[in-house]
Image (cartoon, helix red, strand yellow):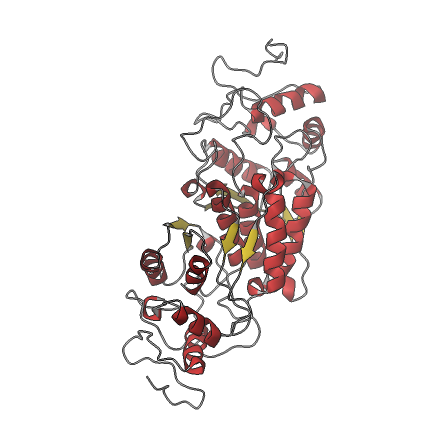
Amino acid sequence: MTTLLIARDQGYTCHALSFDYGQRQRAELEAARRIAQRYGAAAHKVVRIGLDDIGGSALTDAAIAVPETPTEGIPVTYVPARNTVFLAFALGYAEVLGAFDIFIGVNAVDYSGYPDCRPEYIDAFERLANLATRAGVEGGRFAIHAPLIRLSKAEIIRKGIELGADYSLAVSCYAADAEGRACGKCDACRFRAEGFRAAGVPDPTRYQAGKRVRSRSGRRLPE
Amino acid sequence: MTTLLIARDQGYTCHALSFDYGQRQRAELEAARRIAQRYGAAAHKVVRIGLDDIGGSALTDAAIAVPETPTEGIPVTYVPARNTVFLAFALGYAEVLGAFDIFIGVNAVDYSGYPDCRPEYIDAFERLANLATRAGVEGGRFAIHAPLIRLSKAEIIRKGIELGADYSLAVSCYAADAEGRACGKCDACRFRAEGFRAAGVPDPTRYQAGKRVRSRSGRRLPE
């Protein structure tokens, strides 16, 4: 949502792309549809990709649980090569549209240590994109924009609110229920709640009944 | 098929990956299944990916015809970012398996000029793979092998036959019928037939009734 608002603010016509990749919760796809419509995307496409055929992640394999406490190293919610698959599709879609600017909302500050969220990864994909495509070979120049990559979660939230974001629409939780309500326990919930707290902004996240992110001292965070 | 035989000959245990990407003909998926089984792949997975949701190619959009004569430049059978999507999935699958060697049968000699078949593209993907993944960050080293990339079609055919390939099993045609019989007119048919001719090897390709690749002078090629 924040990335869409930034791209729109920079004057881009936005063709939004979401992926139905067998993720554990699918409320984020419905949320993406509402967000694309609300914030003026020219189109929104949901592409089905069989990452669940491969498995290997808590997000795509029901047999692997989503951790409810922080873990050492890269967590089991890492989906092997996920952003590479996403960007490859985005590249194909851009080429079909005749577009050269691809935006992705990855973040390498308040994050879980996923390798495919780092600036050097984004740079390597941009280089690949210009070798991979007819449009690149024929003289076009693809750019991969990751406007959130060096921001803290608090900075992202402040930027989004400045551009009119209603974060109650956005689902971050890895284990959201069918209505998009958050578990309050996973990494994504923790980073998000800390972001609102650090930004000094009320957190509009809808939590599942009786669930809410607790602060580090074990107390529930204030509403 | 040839790439599988080469990888097996080099001692690799092979987990074969095919893509149901909305391609015009699906006989190649059935052929891939038979080939994987016949030539000792340890596994064969067919992954569904929605490249037809994006379109933009004669291979994924029924409204764009497959050319029956050679065209200038990169032809309309080019599928935007196709090999990037394929390799991204292969990378994810390799990481789940704990494998580091990815084989792809691209060729940059007797080919249609697709940008994602060139050595510089393969090198850029290999670099990306090692930045994109947990396995790469944790000290593993992915290698993308493209053993056919600098061979002529005749050399590929000779190599395959030396390793026991039965090319009557392999479907190359962009517009094969449901039984895998070739159209004899598309680029893929032309390059394949020329390869058998140049290799001095009988061409076992099964053609649709009344169809057969014609030589440059317009005469039918000898059987």
